Each structure stands twice: as C-alpha cells, then as structure tokens.
Length: 213
Length: 194
Ligand code: SF4
Ligand code: FES
Ligand code: FES
Image (cartoon, rainbow over all chains, first blue to last red; front, side):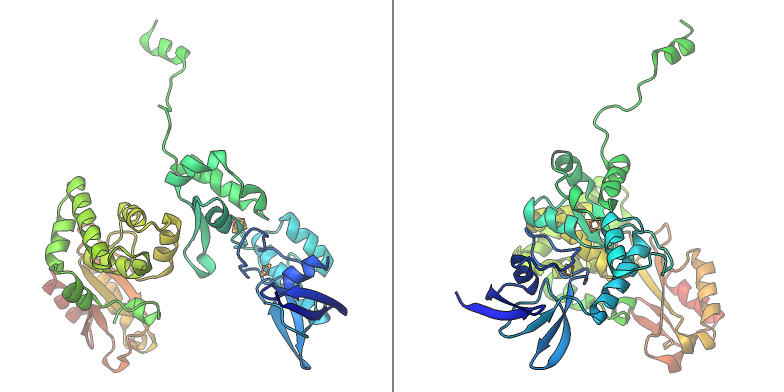
C-alpha cells in the first residue's frame, strides 16, 4: 500500500492512498468540524462545514475535506480567517432553518455565528442526509428518502415501509442533528399509518346513555 | 416545447417513445385508462402497461428514468401504485423512485388532463397581453395555473418564454403553438379541443 505524506496544520502526517483529508486528520486526532459525515457511510459532502484550505505548489484553494482524497506534499490548514468566516456563514444559514439544534449552537459559539443573522425559515431539517443514507446504506430498509429539490427539498417517510420497519429499528433517530427526523416520523405515524385495529371504541357510559340502559 | 424543457430538465419525446418502443396508440390508452371509473380496471391496465414498458428495457434498473418517462407520457401521470410496482419489479427502493419523480418536473404524481395548455407569461408575451390570455383560459376552463379540471380535459401551466417572442402572446396546446392570441381567438382555439 502506498503511503502518502503531507502536512496538516504544520504537522507531518501519513495516510494511505484513497483516504480523505478528513479521515487522515481524524487518525491524527486533528479536529475538523462536520455535520453530514458518518464513519459507516459513504462520503456525502453535503454540509460543507468540513471545508479546509489546501496549498499545492504555492497555490491555495478551498476543498471539502470529507470527500477530498489525500495527495502527496499538500499543505492543509484546518483553520484560518477565511475558513472561519465561511464556516460562520454556513452555520448562520443552517440556523435559519434549525435555530435550536444543539450541534449548531455549539458550533455557533465556537465560530461566533449569529443565529439571527438570516431571516428564520424553520424547516428544521438541514439536509445532512444522515437519516436517508443510513436507512439506505446500513439498514437497507429505505424507509425514508428525500423528495423534491432545491429550497423545497424535504425528507419523507414511506408510510408502508416505515410502518413495518421503523418501530423496531429507529437507528437513525440519534443521528439527526435537529430532531426533525423524529418529528417527521411521528407525523407520518399519526397521519399515514394504516390503523392496526378499529380505532373507535365507545366508552361504556356513552353506550348506556344512548340505549337508555 | 413544454415547461420542463424550458426548465432544462428533461426532454420528453412523446412521439418517439410511442412510435418506436411500444406499439400503443396514446389516445386509446389514455381513453382506456382515464375514461373508466372502475378503479380495478384502471389498476389492471396500468399494471399491464408498466410490465410492457419494463419488458422493453429488459427489466434493467438502469433504465429507471426512461421507464418512468415512458409511463408518464402514455399514462399522463404516475399513480402511487405504479411507483410501487416499478420499485418491486426493478428492485429499486421506493424512496429513490420518489426522489426522482419529485425532482424532475417532467413527472406528475396527480392526474393530468388530456390536453396540456401552456400559456407563455414571459416578458415579451407579458407586454403583449399574456395576462388577458391567461384570464380567458382560466375562465373558460375553470382552472388556475398548475391545476387540472375534474373531467381531466385540460391541465394548465404557465411558462416563461417559449422562444418565439415575435409570435406573442403565445399559447401552446399539446405542443402546438398558437400565435398572436387575443381573448377571442383563445376561446375559439379552446373550443376546438372540446
Ligand atoms: S431529518 Fe435530520 S438526519 Fe435527516 S436529513 Fe434532516 S437534519 Fe439530517
Ligand atoms: S462533513 Fe464534509 S461536507 Fe459535511
Ligand atoms: S416571452 Fe413568450 S415566447 Fe418569449
């Protein structure tokens, strides 16, 4: 296996070909913030929070570390003025959707992000795709997926599958950074699951009143 | 040209689909599928249609998009049951199919009318009085943009420029362009699609 040497934050690190910058950094206990990354899942590159500065032959560029493969002799900076500013804006944009997500609040503190900077549009989902991808790649049940696109993109449970599978699984629940997933599930359950037994049972007292017994 | 093409999503070539791949007469199928009100028969027809189209592509999951487009163009819309059947036959998760059919505007998950009305409200047509044309159509059909009437006769859609501004205001019915429309002309054209 070919070993690749490069630099992260002034430290020489070694990685194996095919690794991502994020993966290599994690191996070395160098912290890069992420929202849509998950060890068990394919790289997704959805949140852009893991953005880092890359210097190759004197040229700097910005890359998304969770999908960018390591290269020989690159210089990676996980924090800089520019990166902090970008991360701050990303967090602020996400907070317009999910103002009270714990992960975002922690990040906001770190990067000095103002959750009120952008007009609130509480859709609560930040499209990290963790739930959708986990349900596809790990559990293989595909009970939840994305629908629509752009600003209208949403997650959506498929009631027929969710009714059969979710109650015994719910492995995606703790992954959601905003708890929107749980809310969406409860909503689907309430609105779209087929009733398992006759729902209306009249109380005895009511029956008595009607029949006059 | 229809809205989807203008949005740059997908080019639907109905003729080719119908002539080349499946020997089905659109009108017949649509009449058969839509004019019946017995649910079960419709289900069966659609199931058969889906099976035939899938067979045309040898049941390959990689042809999913094309299969969906074919069904859309013959049946005018994609019923939930149809999606479930496709998912089952191609062994593609329903969630993925759902994502695709909600992503592209070429697909409809609600019934569409037999005639598709596209009223151009692009800048050129707008200054030439597209609003009056739209009003006329809305009044004559009783539906607003994005809607379909109960008889499934018309679906109405507004588009932003059909690329023939000199002919404005433009109304397109089933791909046929009607140029230099006036409210009176519009009503006349609509009547021919009675
Ligand atoms: S519901 Fe939660 S886990 Fe799923 S995409 Fe939205 S934020 Fe991510
Ligand atoms: S963790 Fe890299 S884009 Fe989300
Ligand atoms: S604006 Fe109507 S065709 Fe261009």
